[in-house]
Image (cartoon, rainbow, N blue to C red; front, side):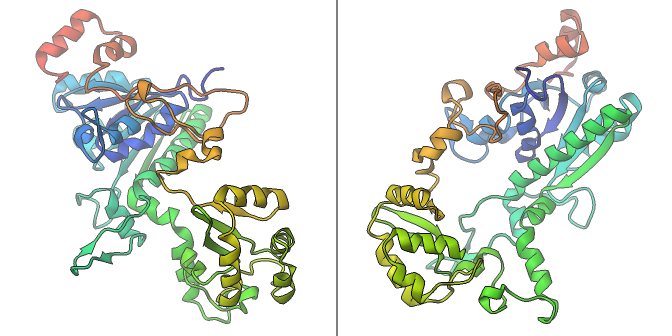
Length: 407
């Protein structure tokens, strides 16, 4: 079947991580043309690992895109850019905000030529506020949003702890959602839109539960409390409040770890029946729901002994059979060995993409999404795109190359 976004054209001026804003659009079938300077986006050499001379970051974020090199500082380069964007559905500025506007080819210029187009700008701190012109990299948005807790090593030096990067990955999801919403409206009304988002804002929005909990706790306890099952005692923010949990906790299995989640009384009863330990249920029946038996070390010691008797795979089978929630505790290394991973997610092949990569995680039932092409070399598709999109002849392209407009 036709890919969901087949026929949508996106022209993107991007450097480094913000290019991820169009990665999902490519996976869904959109044509994304990446405009680069002659030297190319140096993301190809940035970060690790480097796979056969090219960074995994580039191979993943820019897979399926077409690369065109342009000197946007030259008049000829600007003319080519205008021709490329005259019928585009979306134009993306994935760099410091206002870069294209300063060159005279930004949102206002696009609006005059292509009023139905959606212009989207993604940057570190956004186009407003005191930090708008500050240089930054990906972890900055997580530290700004309060997601990263500094750690101290054995020599007393602070360091960045291991954590899941949020800002650089959440922003593309929010941005792609907003772009698609704006395109739908533009196709219905003929009116485009100008979108602007910051990776820092998106990091904070993604971690809304902790910051909103803190905000709620600033109100008096007569208005904001904890759960009834905790005698309304306020817990720490988010998952920090899980540390003292017992019926919702990680336990060591015979060959690894599992996450036990029987915080509902019905699940807890099923577990006790399945293990032949109804004495535990009779002694600590718990509440109907949201009861983690916090701080019950006696029960925790019993559960520790029980979980050590089976492998993680055996506990997974047990949980599914007797209907109590138990989950594996994988690592980035072991995740691919999990049978659920193989059954649903799997790998896009390195033979095609340069490195094994995870694909788009949403299924279209009865359909197969196209596998994107390998991330491009700088300028790999310049001639192809200028012929197909701008109807340039070989002679015109040669003249542009001679003038330096193509880098």
